[in-house]
Structure formats: C-alpha cells, structure tokens
Length: 84
Image (cartoon, rainbow, N blue to C red; front, side):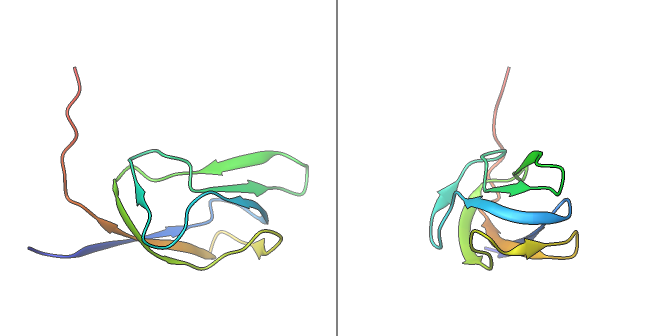
C-alpha cells in the first residue's frame, strides 16, 4: 500500500496556544490539531481534511509561527469517509 504523508502548515502568524495531538495519535478528518493565537488575540483552530496517524509534531505551546511553519506531518490512512 502506498504511504501518503500530509504536511500541515500554520494558516497564519501567531503563537501556538495549545497542541491537541501527539506523535502516533490517530486523528479523524477536521479534528482540531492545534490552536494558534494571533497578535490581535484571535484563536485559530488548525485541522486537516484527512484522517490518519500523526508521525511528527514540530511545535510546542508558546512557539511563534508563520504561514510557512510546519506544524505536523500526518500519514493519511487513505480511507474514504461515508456520509449521507
């Protein structure tokens, strides 16, 4: 089976308020992964539209981020979710 790794980058400038996942954790699509606090005190929730296993977490609370900051790498489980 082909391995697909998804890189998750910060969507904004700010600092990591909370890390909601750890390495080897399984996450579902659109599950919150990080909370980022912007300069104007807005909290941005970071999620991704795939499910899979977290392979690497590159951030800790308090770290500054930009839109080029790699937050985590997720191994896509390649499952297609069903919905009505």
